[in-house]
Image (tube, rainbow, N blue to C red):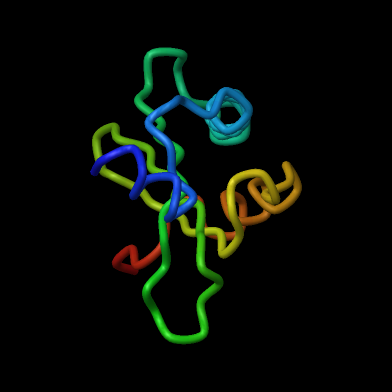
Length: 100
């Protein structure tokens, strides 16, 4: 995407350091809440939501270990608080859409 189009769409190729820092904080909170080893892979991403009725941005959390687990928080990364993360993880520690 060229720079003019990126600016028009409100995007930039420059890294958003605040968002990256918050993603790291959430990843560490996931490790602590779930008791994961330090070397566990945890990803935190802010993505556009295309589902009807969904806010324009959502935050996806994934733990990639023996089994992949995922959670979705319907808010942009900067608006996700620690309590919402803890609640999602403790309510569904096996992740969303897990077989029961």
